[in-house]
Image 1 (spheres, helix red, strand yellow):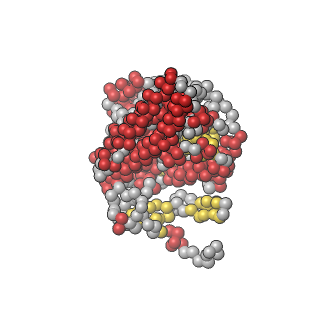
Image 2 (image 1 turned 90 degrees about the vertical axis):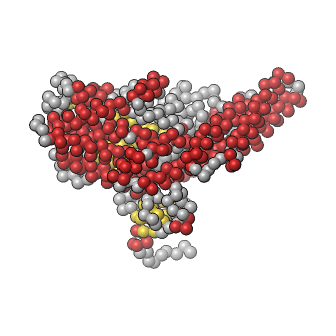
Image 3 (image 1 turned 45 degrees about the horizontal axis):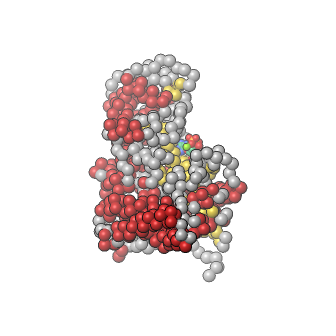
Length: 605
Ligand code: ADP
Ligand code: MG
C-alpha cells in the first residue's frame, strides 16, 4: 500500500520459503514436495537494484529443496571453493609456504562478449525475439573481412550505452574495467576486475541483466546468444581463473624467489593434471545448444580441450621432464637457485588466441565458455578437479620429501612425473587447424562435438566419485542436472524448429510466392525458372521439418533419447529450410522480403 514497514525481522532476511514447484528439478522431487528454501549467502554482498519507480534490496541467496539437495548453482560453487581451499592449504603447508594464510580463494574475471543491435530490427525478427538467434539470413556482402569494426572507434550511441551500463554496474559494486569493440560487426566486450569465484559469478549474472536493461534505454537490444548470426563470429566468455591466499598471494604467479617458483610449478602442474584427467567433464560443463554452433567453427576454440602454456613455460616443463636443468639465465628468466630446476620465464610469454585453456602470465584463461552461460558450473568443475589434483600431488610430495635432497628435489620429482603423464593435453599450435584434430585423436584427447555427446560426462562414474569425495554434488544432484540440461537442450531445439517452420511458412514462402506472381504477370520466364524450383525446395523442406517436429515422432519420455533425436533429426531439417530460404532472400525483391537483413542488423549502429 506504499507505506513504509515499521518492523522487519532479521529472520525474514536469512531464510525464505518460496514455492519451487515450477523450478526444473531433474526428477529430484515431485510437484507435491515443491517446497524450496532460500538462505542468505553473507559472503556475497547484498545490493540495491534501482528502478524508475523505486528500489529493491536484493540479497544473494542459496536455494535448496526441502529434501536437502542443492537446486541452484551457488551451493555447489561454494562447496567447490571449500574443497580447493582445503587442498591448497594442505599443499602450502607441505611446501612450507602458508605464510599465515588460512584460506585459498579461487578467483574469476570474466570477459563478456555481446552484440548490440537496433531494437527496431529485433522486434521485426520473430526468430531473435523467441530464440535469441537468427534462424534465417543470408551472409552480407561485407562481413568482418576488413576488421574496420575491431579497430574502429566506438559510435556515440553505443558508447553512451556502455558508459551508462558501467555506471549502473559500479553502483551495484561490480568492478567493471574494460570495454572495447570485438571482431564481428556490432560486437563488443566488457570485463570486470577479478573477484573471488562466488562474488564474481554473482556479479556476472548481474552484469548480463544490467547490460540488457540499459541497452533498451538507447533503443538497442543486447544479444547474449552464443551465435546470433550464422557466418559471423559468435560470442563467448573468457573465464580467467586463478587461486589466491587470503593474504594476497596468487598461487599461479611465477615469483621473484626460488621458493615462490617452486610453489608456482607445483600448482601449475596440478592444473595441467586436472584438466587432462577431466577434459571431458570440463567440456560438459560448458555444453549448450548455442555453444554447438560456435565451438570448433574456426572462431572459437574447438570442442577438444587442450592447454596452452606458452613456449617459454613449455620449455621449463620439458627441461624438468628430461631432468636437465638449464644453467643459462637470460634476462627474461628467473633462476630457481637450484641445479634441479630450470629457470622460469618472467612473463607469461606469447599468446595463443585459439586455445581453449591458456596460461596468461599469472592465471589460466578458460576460453570456451558461452556468452549467455552462468560461470558457476564451469568454475565448480575447475575448482573441484584442481582440488583433487592438488591432493594427489601433495600426497606424492609427502612421500618424496622422505627421501634425501630436500624440497627442490621432491617438487622436481613430483612435477616431472605428473607432467610426463599429462603432457598430452599441452598444445601450443593452432587449435583451429585440421592437423590438430588428427593429432588430438592420436593423443587420445576427447572431441565431444555436440551437447548430447558431452553431457553424459556429468554422470560418468569418475565424475560421481570425484564430486562425492569433495562433497560438491551428490549423485542425485548430478543426475538431476544432467536431466535438466538434456531437457533444456531438446526443448530449445524444439522451440527453434517450430519458430523456423512458422516463419518459413507464414512469412518467407508467401513473400517468395508474391514475387513469383509478379514475375508471372510480367511474363519473365527465365526469372520464373530461377524462383519456382527454390519455392518448391523450400516448401518440401518445411514439410519435412514439420514432420520430424510432430509430437508423436518425438519420444520425450527419455531425455537422453529425446536430445539425441533433436540433434540427429531436427537440426538437419532446420538447416535445409534455412538453406533454401537464404537463397531465396538473395533473389526475391527486397521490398517484399519480410525480415530485416544481416546487412541492416549488423551495420546500423
Ligand atoms: P589479459 O590481457 O590477459 O586479457 P587483463 O588484465 O585484461 O589480462 O585481464 C583479463 C581478465 O582477467 C580481467 O577480468 C582480469 O580481472 C582477470 N584477471 C586478472 N588476474 C586474475 C586472477 N588472478 N584471477 C582471475 N582473474 C584474473
Ligand atoms: Mg583475455
